[in-house]
Image (cartoon, rainbow, N blue to C red; front, top):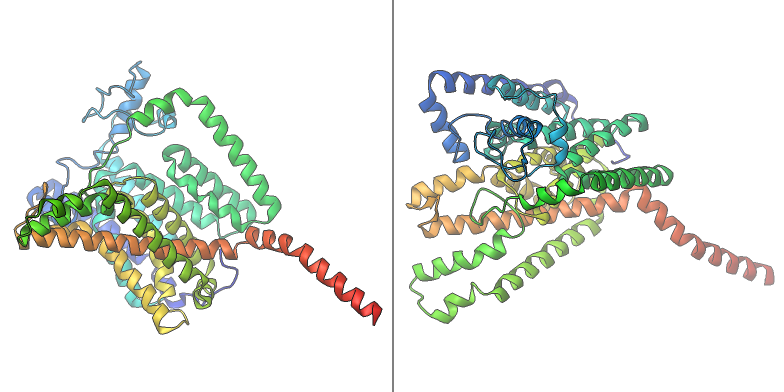
Length: 465
């Protein structure tokens, strides 16, 4: 993404396999624990991710099951008796065409998928400093990635496709085409990765136009061919409740009223008007508008900062590339809808770039912004564990949510942390767009008539003189 080669992670390059090795070791330990010490296994997972399922890899079992049902004529958008949890299909109908998958999902297949995830982490740019390596290790074994791996959710498959695409997208144009193909495949399977078409902006204008045309034709054909199944699929999209393990723009505006209402009652406020006003639609809309305005304002202010742009341009291509990929995915998921916590696995794309920015040659205040954002990302990644600790210490509960002032205050802080993270990641995206080849070409074309006119005037004045 950035054309300039920043100060590389030289010495840290030699230990890029440390995190994958630690991950594979932890996976083996978890398998042994599940087999021979299940009480310990479930206790540890409960601390890390709150709600481990009684059998591992439950999410991955759905796809082969619904495919088997579909092959036998069952309308899997209405019922799915083959699935252990009878979950109807809320994924792309393209999954149903993966008839090469086995009828049942074994634990060995789940282990292979999780092992592939840990191996893929070697494709991410290594941190530049030892402290960065420690942060990446802590992030890898945090609540959100563990949640995704324990379930063997399809977002792990998306992660694998996207990390390979990211590796391709910082190389020559033919290799980048492979990366764009992987992004397209991921997008046709789970839709949200399609936002990564923003990476087309780094190409020359002719390539950009060609890629956009191909993408438009392909997506149009996909929607036309699967239109009936897509309409049925949309009906099955889950609605994740507020105060759950998920994240999204709705959480704070829609949940703040309930949190404030509980806190006000806890301190003795009994005024009915006050208690009702924090739950009104006007309050929700007002909070949402304020949050969006604040996030966009912070993002624009940061992206217009010369030091911010210089720091971003100083990143190595892999660092800036994966930072843009992670920023795009997190922001798109955050503003599109509610997301289960396991989708936070894409924070692992963001961390190498943020860690590099936190050590860049910039003002003290700007470095503080980057370091604070790294801390915020870690708080988000470990959010489930933090909520559980607060609930235990304060006498509250995470399911159902509430029961103490501390847990509501912790929740509010967590949600504000999410909005800060999104603000900084939006600034990264604005900076990427401003420095992209396509945007510079457009600006150059817009300024050309002005330059021609100015040159003509100067030439005319020179002739008269």
